[in-house]
Length: 99
Image (cartoon, rainbow, N blue to C red; front, top):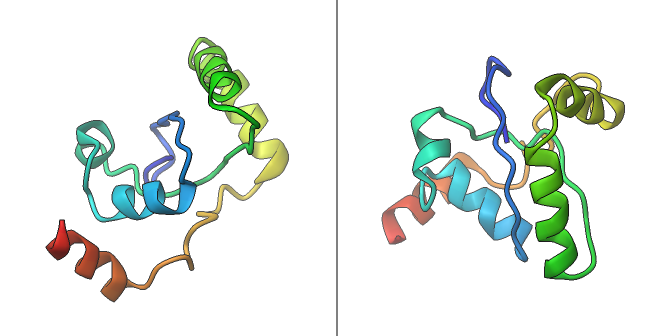
């Protein structure tokens, strides 16, 4: 996850990416992402098994910032929000109200 200016990155692990993105976009559940407005999904990996996913998360968190950006740009050179069209503003607001 990143902010609009692409100055901050957040790396996390989840077993339900779509729900987790909705939580981030609505400002729920993660104070770090809410504080820094990290609402854009610019990269993700699908990994089999939570143990492997956690191992990969820890690996990426230990990487230098430039390495992370290079990895992201290999798959998403324009740094677009990959989840831009997953939810409408109305759906995000409705989730915010319901939680």
